[in-house]
Amino acid sequence: MTKVHTPLILVNFKTYSEATGKKAVKLAQTAEKVSLETEVCIGVAPQFVDIAPICHAVSVPVFAQHIDPIAPVSFTGHILPESIREAGAVGTLINHSERQLTLADIDATIKRARETDLLSVVCANNTSISAAAAVLKPNMIAVEPPELIGTRIPVSKAKPEVVSGTVEIVKRINPDVVILCGAGITTREDVAAALRLGTEGVLVASGIVKAKDPYKVLLEFAESITKA
Image 1: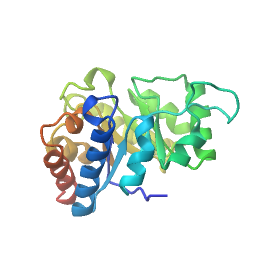
Image 2: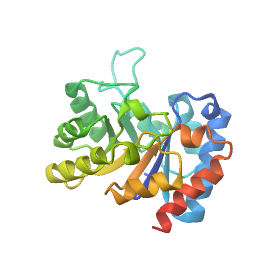
Image 3: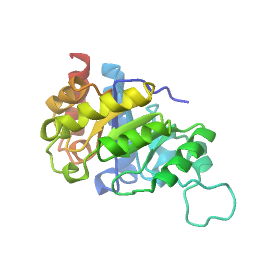
Image 4: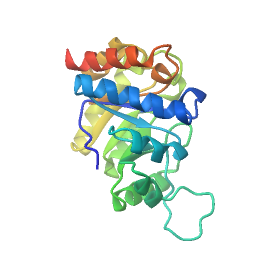
């Protein structure tokens, strides 16, 4: 398994055309280049069909955007955790605001991820949801107020109390959980602010994927970590 360490920059490719197919592989290679140059851990979360090609092309950690808490039997159209692991992924997002689950399904999905040796990154939109998720013992929690996603307004500036409050409560419940900051992360200052609030990395998407020069922006993000 590709080693994941913190501070972590995790880039969610979503279903953007700029990160689909060959473009997804190219963007993953950009992430790998910056990671090698700065020694900052940079992971990517591409669309399902792009996981295997990316895993063959690069050495950075690859995450799925979702898995279903199912067994390898008759579940047409579902995402089997074992298939994601076999494709080369090391982890998965769970409960992203664009793919929300019930708390019971979050619990079941975390358990299936654990069974298949996949790291679990649970997305939560506020402090109380983060606290509930922490009890379920995921590997990571990414706090992302949905109203700020894609706005270029970082939660670390718009709602710093949500980030600091999440860090305080989650670490009290489960000190082993890694906390990431998401929503509106677009500049190196946003990354630095997130780390100052006690998080151990960032979950980003359009700030990288839709940037005119993803390499330049990723390098700035990474340097905000190495020079902190």
